[in-house]
Each structure stands twice: as C-alpha cells, then as structure tokens.
Length: 361
Ligand SMILES: [Zn+2]
Image: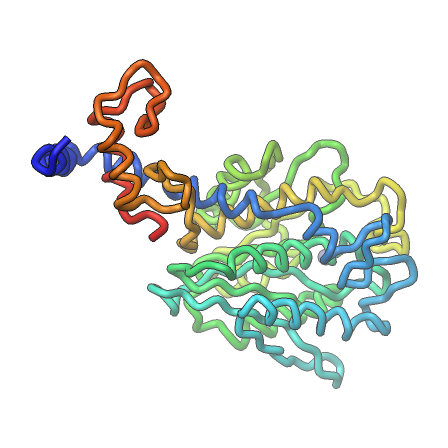
C-alpha cells in the first residue's frame, strides 16, 4: 500500500464520520472501566483495616474512638496526609462546635477546563464514640480510594474529595462547609456514608429529593455500568447525612448507602474485628461505582487502551501504521494488522488505526 492509498483512506474516513463517532462514544465508558478496574480490595483494606492483620489508617479496631476520643485527630491527619500524598491541594477548613474548633478535610483536584464548576464526593470521619468501621470509616475509605486513582489524571471539572467532621452531632461539618461555599457552582454532591455492610442483598441505596433526580439516576447508571454486579434502589428525601445541607441550599445531592440492616449500627461492635461483619468486596463495588461516576461526569481523562496499538507499546503511531501497511492484504487469519479480528488486514483495520491516531502519545 502506497502513500496515495493511505491518503485516499483518510479521505474515506473523514467522509465516513460514523466510524470516528462510534470510536469516541465508546471512549467514556472505556475510561470509566479503566479507572474503576484500579479499585482494589487490597488498597481499600489499607485504608479501612481488617481483622486479618491490616491495621488501616482510620482507627476502626475494637476500642478505637473517632468521636471525641483519642483516635479522632490522628484519623483526620491521616486522611489529610494521604490526600496530600496524591498531589491534591488540601485544606483543613475550620468550624466551631460548642466552643471548640473542628475541621473538614477538603482535597481539591482542579478542573482543567471548568475549574469553577465542581463535583463533590465526601464522607464523615467522626463516629459516635465508637470504632465506626462501617459508620463511617467505610465511606471515607471509599473517598480515599477514589482520590488515589483519579488524582493521577486531569479532569475537565473540579473534583473535591472531603472528609466531614461532626456529622453525628447533626451534620455540623457539612452545614458549615455549605455556609462557607454556598456561592460555589456545585454540580453534584454525593455523601458516601456506610458502604461496607452487605445484608445479603448486594444492593446500594441512592437517596435524595426529587430535585436531585438527575444526579441520582446518573449515579444509578454508574452502579449499573461499573458496580461489578452491585444492584441499587433509588429512594427519596433522606436528611440524615452530609448531602442534606447541600440539598437545603439548592444543590443536587444524594447519599450512597448500603441497603439497611446493619446490626451493629452505632455500637462498639461496629469494628473491623467482628468476624464476618465487614464486606470489603461489597465496598469495592460501591467504590467502583463512584469512580466510574466521576470519570464520566467530571470528565476525568483516563488513558484507555489504544485500539490501534499493534505493537503493544501503549500508543498508536507511525510504528503501528508501518506494521499494518506491511501486512496490507493479509487474509486467512494470523494477520498482525488485523485490528478488528475478522481474519484479514484491510480498509476497516486502517480505519480503526487512523481513528485512534495519536492515542497514548
Ligand atoms: Zn454516618
């Protein structure tokens, strides 16, 4: 195949815009999967801890106390340190409660195209003077895992990862955040609160007012697409977690929470040492859903696999074109340039390569 043929092919492709369109439509979902697949149970256990020797960084073992106890401040500092280690800019935003100062931990991934428009995912790190493994170290571990993965990439919109404080006293920290940021352009806020106790239904609840339906249904789509078999049910107004102050202020907001039935809710038994209690794999499915949601909605630029990458070096460039051209006309299978897998190297393979030109470079 000579240069003129390549040129003719490019013209064919430009007129057959459908090929290019088909490739770019698939991209969003590919990117979501590429990010969601990076959520690992090992990493989640690193944050949350378990009863098999993983300490965790959120103090979730029997006897720990992130309420007004000694583990509260170290947990907060661990959250901030991990956000910082991912290169995010971190602020401890103070608020007062009964004469004492407390802090929301706010990590920001600034949008490269729409820095003033933002998505928020947050969970409260305080507990009811108990280890609070499920309520709510589980939701904070989700936020940390999402931050670990998404912070590697550019995002079109700003994403804020937040650990709220003093939720258990009446949404004090999240209300303070909204009071300080009510002029921000918040496109969607999701509270992740109790995501690691699976009552056997393998289902998540997505709750919020009808005014937040756009967000709720987009999140449900993400559960469907990225939740690895997690199911969901959508409910209405649920003013018991940190999304509520955002809804009261007129923002789209909802909660992602386990299907109800945790027998150790607000007890000392809400700790990772309880045998058979925490379902890390279920929490991973919750986390995958949030990661996929953010990729698709905040426009996170996750490099997916390059469909035109023949030589396996993660890009589609001159070297791949050279292989395809050298293989041009090959048929009967075993053709190196056969990108669409139909047993020959022809126009359609060249189309895939050209539509993917520059991927990964
Ligand atoms: Zn909670």
